[in-house]
Structure formats: structure tokens, C-alpha cells
Amino acid sequence: MKNYRRLWAVLGVGIIALICEFGLHHAQWAQVVITVIGAVIALLMLLDMIKTLRSGSFGVDLLAITAVVATLAVGEYWAALIVLLMLTGGDALEDFAATKANADLKQLLDNTPTTAHRLVDGQLHDVSVDDVQVDDIVVVKPSELVPVDGVVTAGSSLVDEASLTGESKPVEKNVHDELMSGTVNGDAALTVRVTKRAADSQYQGIVRLVQESEARPAHFVRMADRYALPFTLVAYLIAGVAWAVTGNPLRFAEVLVVASPCPLILAAPVAMVSGMSRTSRAGIIVKSGTALEKLATAKTVAFDKTGTITQGVLAVDQILPAAGYTADQLLQLAASAEQQSTHILARSLVKAAGKGLLPVADAEEVTAQGVQGTVNGQLVRVGKAAFAETDQQVDATAVFVNVAGQYAGVITFTDRTRPEAKQTITALHELGVEKTLMISGDSQAIADKVAAQVGLDEVYAEQLPADKIAVLDQTPKENRPVVMVGDGVNDAPSLAVADVGIAMGAHGATAASESADAVVLRDDLTKVACAVIISQDTMRIAKEAVWIGIGICTVLMLIASAGVIPVIIGALFQEVVDTITILYALRARTGRRDADQYEVKPA
Image (cartoon, rainbow, N blue to C red; front, side, top):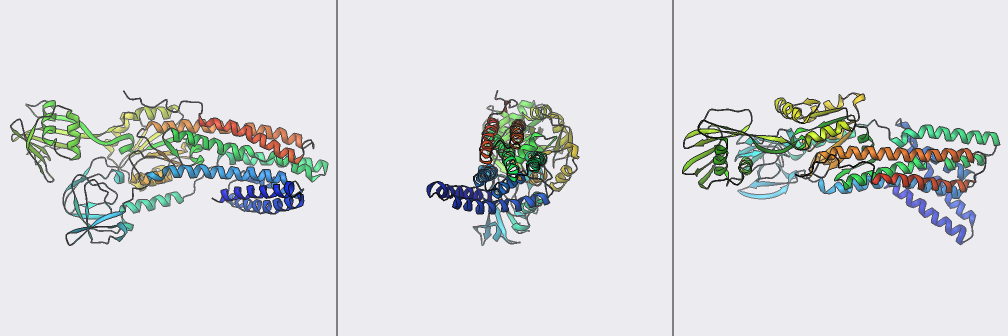
């Protein structure tokens, strides 16, 4: 908002000055208005510039501020006003880009649990999660977010903890088991005794970790600032020599007016806004131009597993029938018995079996054990090993099947990799990414298997949120910038600490979306490669626009040093340079390469 106010102030001063000089014919009034207000704005910008210099950076505004002061000092107030308009306009444009990106994200950012169903004297009362106290009894209904940490006192359900722990398998919760806030309840209600207030919960702990990560300084120099120092020194050198040779301070102002870094102040932000507009049309929200710059030169891309490399949905993996049954028969019997259940694994079984289900009679769901029903005149039991009367064990999420009192086999489930995952990893390597990693909270064996399927370079398994940050921190300087891609609450701290965090936000709002620098709005991992392509195109066009502007400015400086270009004409020439560089920078709206060339097309 500060930059918007300055721009409006300059525009207001310009209108007043025009009225004074050309309406009331009092040129001195116009000069006083522009000089006083212009000096105040230049002073405020100078204070900001000093803060930038103290932080160890060199901003692009110093040369323009010097040009404003020099033109005011020699009485060329209209030239000063033109430079001020250019300067405040460029800053406001950058603010506009960031504001628009955050507005696009607003609808995604609403996943923090806010209400709880408190049980008092047998009655449920909806209360704010902040009003829930330790030892209160709350009820978590099916498919709801767990609002606070607690211990189950009644009920049994499968709980999805993937967003916190990265574990893809739903975890069964029974009486005396602990629940973490931010996890998602399954298909049965749970009664829970609260063990921590909302402010002390697991979810809020991760949010605090995100805030700490975001507060850490990011050591990155923007493109415009990298060009600013040499360009400023060249401009001061030419202007100083012209003043020294002629002894005329006006010559110093004439050179600096045409040297004011419009290409750096305007061309780069215009290209960034254009590139961000292009990513938005492609289904990706990028929050800042700095994120685009880092993406363009990314050397390492790290991925979470569950919901990012994988689909985050359990599907039938292996069907292992006992003697006397085929795989198709076992799947048909199990799915037929489960077809009336709303259990997550039941839905996966029915989907895998397709339309070949048999009628089921006397279907019954046995709490925390499984489902049984009569299929083709035989009692079929599907669920835990003990429920199916077997001592078989498998190292995976599984259901065991018993038909007519005899063990019939086991069906396992897995979180399948995204069909576009391997293609995305290949595309990133083609785009110049040197290393791809997977950082997961899942077990080493599962993580290694997934990584091998999609072609990842390195695997870090069994990682908690703090461990993920450590992995990113240890990335060598030569392998940066490092990009982190994730979708769960447990990914939020690592998304914040990475050079660029990308959240897969298609399935709703998460803390990941809040802490990320970019959010993919479509459930398509190839959009990560798409974002890199657009970023590279944008930065290439921005650099070309800057170099075109610098080249023209350098020629104009040399001409102005000979006294050929009056100050006001120089300021107008600078607007011509602005127009050329802006028009060139706008080419970033379409770019040069097809951003969707790696997208997996529907069969």
C-alpha cells in the first residue's frame, strides 16, 4: 500500500502543478509544489534505499533518486516529476503483482480446524476450537478434521494422518489411542478426551514451525539489483566526467535523466507480472516475481511422496488367493461382501471389481473387525486376520477373506504413483534440474520402491517436518535454488524454508498453500515442469528487455554528455525507452515455448 500511496501522491502533485502553470499561469507555484513534494517523496525513498544498502543489497532506485535530486537542484522540475512517476509506478506495479497472487489464493487457505463438537450432559454443542479445554469431551464426526489433540474414549475408525506424518496408510484408532489435530477422521464417529488446547496442538506446532521458517532471511539477489550496481557506476562516471569537463552542473542532470534505470525498474516487473499471468492461466498461482526468478534457475527439486508423487488414494495392489480360488474369484467375493460398506478400503475393493458384483444378504459391519455377509449362499468375512480366522501376516495395508469358514486369501492395497510422475521427473531433468529428491515420512522400503518407479535421484524416508527442513538446509550452494513440492500440513515448514515452495492445492486448502511460493490448482504434477518452463521464458524475455533498455540508455547518456539533449527532452526520451522495454517485456504473457508440452493427455 505504501507504494500505491506514493504513486497517487505523485499523480496528485502533477495535476496540481499542471493547473498552476498552465491554468493559473504561475510557473513558480508549480515549481514549488513539485520541488517540495518531490523532495519529500525522494527523501522517503532514500530512507528505504539506506535500509536496503544496510542489508547488504544494492537496489535499482538509487540512480533514479539521484536524478530526481539533480533535476530539482538545477530547476528542471518537470523532468523530476517524470522520473518520479516512472519510479513510483514501477514499485506500485510490483505490489500489484503480489497482491493479485495473494487474492487468487484466498479461497484455498481455510483448513485450520475452527470448531469442535463438545459433549456436555449427553448433548453436543458446537464451540470455537479455542474454547475447548483440557479434559473436555468432544465428538469427531465421520470425514471431519480432528480439531484438537486427544485420546479416544469411545468408537473405532480409520484416521488419515497423511497430511501430518506423510504415512499413506489410514491408521486405525480405537479406545485409548491418541489423535492429532489436523488429521481426517474416517467413516465412524469418535468420542475424544482433549489432552491439549488448540494453541498447543500438533497442528499449531507445525504452523509455528512454518512461521519460524518464513522468518529466516532468504539470501537471493533479484535480477534488477544485479544489474543496478554496474549500470549506476557507469552512469555516474559519464555524468561526472561531463560535469568536470564543462564545469556545468546542468550537464550532470542531463546525463542522469536519460540514465535513470527505467528498464530495470519497469521492464523486469512488467515481465514478471506477464509471466505470473501466464502461470495463472496454466492453473498455477505464483505469489511473487522473486519466486519466478528462482524457479528459472532451479538446480534441485524435492518432492513429498503421499499425494504428490503418489495419488494419495489407496488402491488394490496384490490379490493373493488361497488354494481353490482364483484372483478374480477372491476379488469378486470380497467386493460383493463389502459393497454396502462406506469404509475406505471397501470403496477401493468395489472400484477394482467393477460391475461384476454378486448380491449380498445379511450384510453386517463388525466394529473394528470387518464386514460379513452371505454371497452365493456362503458366509463371506472380510477384514482383519483374526476376523478371517487366519494367522497370515503381510507388510502392507490389507484385508483378509474367509469364505464358508475357510481362509480364502488376502488382498493388499497401495498408494499408486501418479501416472504423470515419471514424465514430470524426466521433464525437469531436460529443463536443467540437476537433482531430484523425495523427502517422505513413509517407510524406507515403500519410499525406495516409489522412487525407483518414477526415476528420482535420491530418497530420504521416515522424515518428520523438522527433518525435512534439515535435508533442505544441507543442500550445497552449487545445487541451489532448491524447490520443494508437497501437499500436506507436514510439508508446510519445508515449503516455507525451501528457495521455492510449490503446493499441490487441487484438493482443497492446506497450510501447505499458505506457506508455499506457488500453488498448483489442478491435480497434475506436470504443472511443476510447466511452472519451470514459464519461469525460464519470463526471465529470458525480462533480461532481453533490460539489455535493450540499457543499450539505448547508454547511447543516450553519451549523447547527453555533449549537451545535445535538454533535460526535459531527455526525460521524454526516457519514456520512449520505457515504452520499448515494456512492450518487449509484455511478450512474457505468451512466452516462446509450449508450457503444456509435458502434460499427460487423457486417453
